[in-house]
Length: 563
Image (cartoon, rainbow, N blue to C red; front, side, top):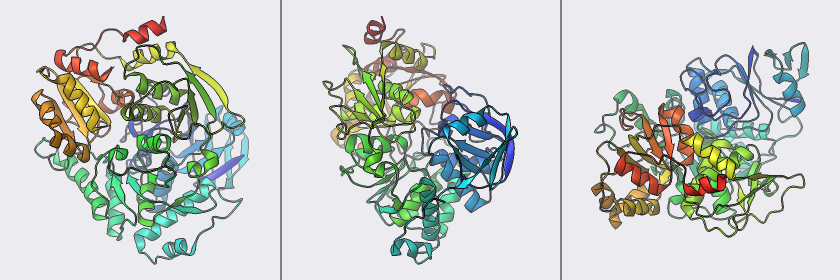
């Protein structure tokens, strides 16, 4: 079976990606080269290819990066998926609908996908897929049923709420049809991820919507941006980057979004509650909201987040529906004795690798007591290796008692997996130049813990130590004295931006090896920063900040369990 999601006439060589790919952080936004250090196709280029992958994964920013690739002439000619996919599909839709850059998007059954993957090249027409003497009829998405729209939805489509809202509803309804949704649903709040300046395409889109009179209709927060909005000039950021990055943030504020500038909106006052329909982008936030809070949101792509904010409506599909929240893979884990806080981000990464395309239920941790920050670290790392918008942990997360799907299978994660991942995360030299904390943004509680670890000591003059965090957390630690203690120890505190959007010179140009306690950043940093990485616990990060040396061996709990 072959379904045409976005129609275009293209031909070109096939590039088969063995695993899903996060275009944000995994692909050079100017050239299309795969830079994810852990991806099997690293070094290959998407540009000019018909790209096959099971589905995408990782950051919601991928839609905007794909649009930027189209502007740069480095986009794939088509995308072919085996599973459902929204992030890159939305980027291709915006590229064609708004800017005339056509990228075909198809979805194939597993059998047809495997057959095509054996070929070297393919041609796509509006009605057929052709390769190696084979021909597949293409069925348009949504051909089996019509999307049911309310009178209010049609008012948006008729332009009664302005040009921007009309375009937003056109995009929402087109994607909803492709997703097989039967209707739309109201959402109570939105979190915008498209405010990160990954390429000029992001500003082009936001400015176009603002100029069309776009105005949010539900409470809307904003993700971390690409500069410290108030201080980027003093920090020496090139105006060629700082000016458009700040202008991108300003465009969303102009449309009514709140300048929260955090990648951890669940840390803001009055977070979402169980069963609340929200519309969040930013992968770690989506996973945390669904898994830990029990709220409901699919992983909305950049650009879709604004469309939903302008209308208050989203496709009623995916994990908005109860039947799609059940686990389809059971993962058994045993927490080793003496495990420190590195256990949780490493577990998240490993669970994502074990369940790259489905919701898992993690068993075996019922007697553990993870903190909110442990769960934050787990969800963030999980999002780097899985396309799924949520997970369950037996005895811990609120929906873990949902009965698994009848066809759910079972795997396990063992000591050898943690030992292997520690080696993957620790490729850098022992001498560390930078300690990078706050991916996702540090909470006030994490800041206080690190302050206690640093009390009475100093960061080495050879090591830059930086915490990134949201404005709300900054206000809290400024009021309770934690900020003063951190700065007295030589720790730099930077709001608004995050490690996945940081650039030189705020990222120290001299640094060649960085250390982090974040599984998410340990995964993305080699590609994003072109530096090598060391990974360890928060206590180890404090010791490295003082000494400049990363631990030479894994922690005892990994050594003992691996033995």
